[in-house]
Image (cartoon, rainbow, N blue to C red):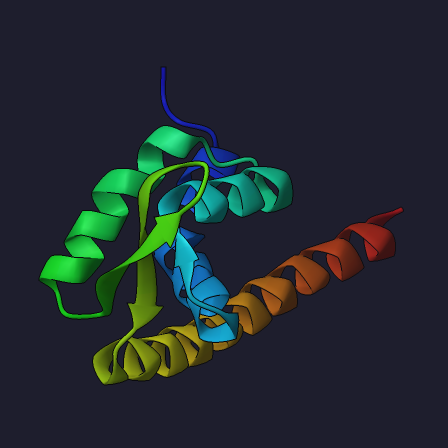
Length: 115
């Protein structure tokens, strides 16, 4: 069964969303996953491989923070390359969504004219 457009859009936007969250504040993977689960319905399992890939690509770096309630947490923060990637991806996203909105609006207008 083919993936729905919703799943495809979420997968495509996930990296951008992670970069945007980390631009606001450093965070650990579970917190990022929780925020994205609430915001766009992404599951926790998709975050950990993405975070490793972003670290390998030099977009994020990690550091440990001691916790009084358990083991240290691995926090992620954007690198300069991560900030540049966020800027580029956000610009691409805005251009893409404006183009899709225009196509949809044209289709809506055409349907209204036929009615």
